[in-house]
Every structure is written in structure tokens, then in C-alpha cells.
Image (cartoon, rainbow, N blue to C red; front, side, top):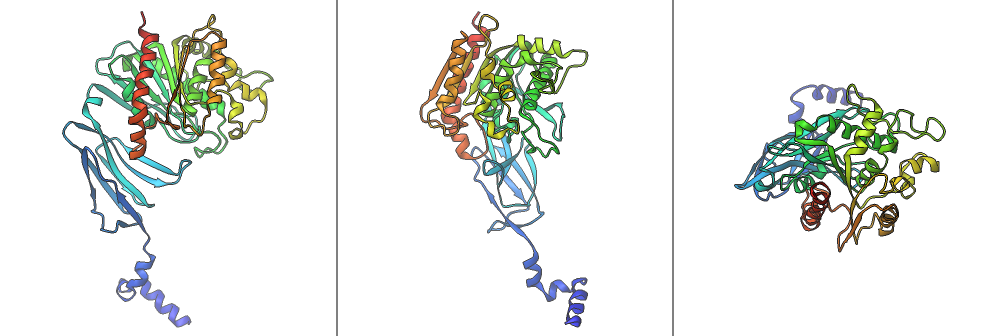
Length: 413
């Protein structure tokens, strides 16, 4: 037995081993299945060419090159793997070429959009505004070409406060920028608990501070994007709906007093502060700039999602709940536009209605539409065909309704 082991060791260090034991070598080589998705309105190539069965050795680097058809522009090159909170995770590139290292079974593809949708837009991606933790916080800017002093719409993505990034809102951004009346900016934020890979938990109030920091950064650089820092609307879906409501209703609580460090004191310190400006100046600028709110199928009361939070005290829950901080219209007008699908299994009608009732009680203008037949997250944009079809069916129509709401607020005069 010892002699046999010694012989096998010698051959394993010799190139002849591959010839003598081909079946052993093959069994040790790990492979994954790569499945190409048929392209619409364009084409793409994968190099090296995939074998007929799609089996590719682990570690293989694939180069995917996309080419739009006439009249179309690239949306994204992507690959999707199993995993993540929602069952799958997609990784996207917005250049025409993407390199992918095969480490899992995956589907690969490219998506395209009509050129007319994007030809008059200048897109500035991945503007980094802060880095409070392991990941940089960034946003994407969609500016009409030649924009000057236009109102700004800030979009905050959903995903259970624990997944996705600003890219998932690009479909909504492209719809809201139509007509050239707005600069639209889609922002990212940290995820709760340790889901970003943080060594310590990130609490919900820190996500709200990320939103305030992003808005402060946007205001500071608004002129570069063709926007007006003093006229801002906020929107978001699902978790982003809550954060949009928070941006509008909790901004008077921006301050340097700490969040819960002292008894009864809950103040938000924005993740980013412009150089030379105090936190009180930033509070005033954000509070006065936000003129309209369009949260979609979101929660306004932390009691509705307290199982996600590490804090158990009611005072903390109240401090992060827009429902508890709706201003009277005589103090500050915050007109709202709200939508929810009738088939939404995540956010029930009653959850949204409580916020609508609080707004009405405070005299705030509010429009609440229940979208017949729609489920949750119909404003999302992902590369899979089902998500894009849902957006085409519901997202486009109600993005136009949302834009009309913003038009009424910002251009009624």
C-alpha cells in the first residue's frame, strides 16, 4: 500500500499523469452550466464559445460583447446566479463588454432599449458621495441634455433595506426624465444589520442618514447636473418608499445630538456634509428643498417591520417612523402621490392607508391609487424578461402619473 501511494505521488507531479489517469483528472475538474438568454433588439457574443451542453470549467473567464440593433441602445450586459434574499442575484455592466469569471451556474445575456428612450439623456453613473462602511455610497444621474436649474427628483430603491442598489430604479428614472423637465438621481444606501459585510450592525437610522447625506451631496453639486438644489421631489418603492417618506418628514430632526445616545434625543447626522456647512444649515436646506413626495407601496410605521430591527424600544421605532412625524400643512406642505398594487402580498392596503389617513388629518394633499392587478415592486427594472414585462405593463403608466403629480407641484404656476 505504501509503495502504491508513493508511485501515485510521483505520477501526480509528472506531466505523464494526465495521460495515465485521464478519468481521475476529469472527475476532479469542477464545471458549471452557463445558459445564454436569447437577445431581443440586439445581439451578443460569448468568448470562448460555450460548448453545446453549456458546461464550463470553474474559473473560466468569459468575455461578453453586446451590439444593439438599429434604433436601439444597450441597457446592460448581465449574468444572474442563484442566491440573495429574492432567490437570484443579477450582476450588470453598462458598457458593451463584460468579463465574467465562472464560479457558479449562471444565465448570461444582454438587454436593449429603444434609442429614443435615452438619446436625449446624459447619464452619469456611480457618483460616490460617502463611504461610511465597507461599500461606497453612490448615485446615478439622469440629466436632460442641456439641463439648467431643473427640479430634481431623487429615487430611493427598495429591497427590504437589505438588497439591490440604485441600478434597479433606472427604468423609473428614464421614464421620469422624459420631456426634459427634471434631473433624476437614483441613490444607494447601506443595508441593515450586517448584510453589507459590516463587522458591526448597521441600524435603520443610519440608512436614513445615508439618504440625507446623498441629498446634501446632490444639492452641493446640483449645478453640475443641471439641477436646482432648492426644488427637490423624493420617490422610492417598498423599503425605498419608507426612506422617501423619511427624507421628507424627518428632515427637521437632522442634527448633531446623536441618535438615542441621550435619553429622548433622536437626531440624524447626514453621512455627508458639504465642506464649510454646519449640520443645522444642511437641515434647513434639505427641509426647505423637498417639495413633493411619491412613495410607492412602502411602510411608514416601524411597528410594521420591527422584526427586522435589533432595537426593541418604542421610542426608537417612533423616531424612524414617518407616520409619527407628519407635519401640519400650515407648517410645511408635503403633497404626496402614492401607489400600491391590489395583488401586493408584501405591503397590505391597510399599511398604506394609515399613512394616507395621517396625511389627510394634517391637511396634506395626497393622492392614493390602487393599481388593479399589480403585485409588489412593479417599478423595479431587472434584466429578466418577467420583471421588464411587469414594468412595461404597470411601471410605465404609473411613472407617467407620478410625473404628472410632480409637474403639478413644480410647474403649476
